[in-house]
Each structure stands twice: as C-alpha cells, then as structure tokens.
Image (cartoon, rainbow, N blue to C red; front, side, top):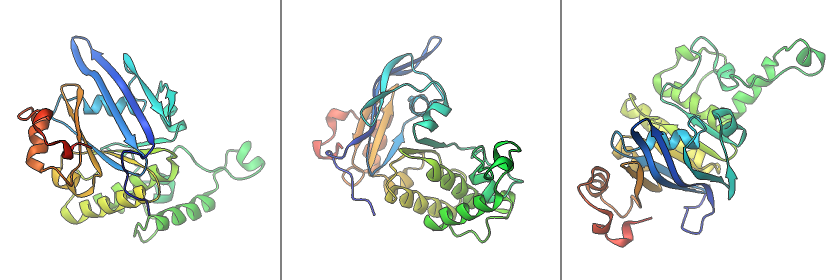
Length: 267
C-alpha cells in the first residue's frame, strides 16, 4: 500500500503558466498544476473555472497556447491523446467509451488487442482471445473488481460496474497517471462507493490519480489534496483533512480569498 504523499513526494506531472484561448474567451489564464507521486488529487471549480481545459491539456486532447507541461521532470509536448497515452497517461471520461455489445475482456483491450503469435497475428491479424481473457481476469482480480465473468457483455452490467471496467482499463495500461472525469456521476450511493474504493486501490498500486468531481462529499472522502480552479487559474491547493467543505466552496466561488485561509490548510 502506498504511503501518504507529502511536500517532498516527487512531482509526476507539473504544468506552468498554461494559457488557452478560444476566440475572445480565455479558458486558462496562466494556470499552474502539480501532481505528486502516490496521491489522489481532486480538481474542483465552478463552471468556467478552466478545470476541463486544464485536464484536456494534461490528457493531450487540447494543445495550450502558452505554458509548459513536465512529466517526471522532463518537458512533455502532447499533440494528441495518443501522445499522452504513449507517455503513460490514461483518461476515463464521463461517457466511458465502452462498447456495450462487447465482452468485458474485449473492452479492457479495446484498441490494444493482443495478436496471436507468429504469422496468424502478424499477417492475418488474428486476435488472441484466450490471452486477453486470462489477462483480463488477472487484472480485475488484482484490483478486486467483483464481476462474475469476463465474457459477459458490458451492456449486462450496472452503471457502477461499467465504470469499474473503464477505470480498470485505464489502470491496466497507465504507467504514470490515471485521470478520471466525474467517475461517480449518475451513480447511486452503493455504486459510487464501489468506484471510490476502486480509485483507492489504483492509487495504492502506485498510480497517482487526478479526480475531477462536483461531488464534494466524495472529494473530501477520497482526496489527499484538492486543487481549486478559479477564473482560469489555480486559486489554491488545500488539505481536505484541515479545511472545511464550506471554506473550500467559498474559495472556489470567490466568496473567500486564499489570504483569508489559515496557512495550515494549504497543501
């Protein structure tokens, strides 16, 4: 199990002065960001705060107009989500991007199917379904995802189970970071807790997690630190164990300035 991150934990992703404009609208206005090893970092902000643009830059879906992104201390330039994936950054979006009619095993390897050895795989492009099934079982067991059969279609699963499949797929291929966009949205209490527990397991396996969420109780339950975005910038990074939910929301909405917070709540 991972130890709690601290100020000395190495930086996995760092962004400095990110700017992104869409015509007359400035979505990011010199945004900074830091993700440390071994942590779940929640990103919160009102609509228009820039959190979606920030995450898209980190995931390679958006190219910033200005600023720099570093991965393990090295300058990174992501021109597409594929670049970010090659760098070991996996993103789980709200729409999940699962294929309902395909099996769980097929979904875990969607777009990264394992080919059969020899000419069958290299020339005929035949898929090694047995190996994919075996690896799917191993990976889901490793994350303690309790799904009866990897051969059942995703459309037979509950919303929470589908979300777990998407999270497990990201965790299986991520080498550096897993980004999760509203992973518990539209889920009931039981299924939301199931997904939160899976996110903890992903972190405890050594993968830091960026969690974008509007669900403040979930954020305070699971996050090691909270990045508050406001007006296209980083307003503050706070410790959820030392700050109240109401003060966090006050900073997020502009009702309270960072200077009004006691220093010990900053992380």
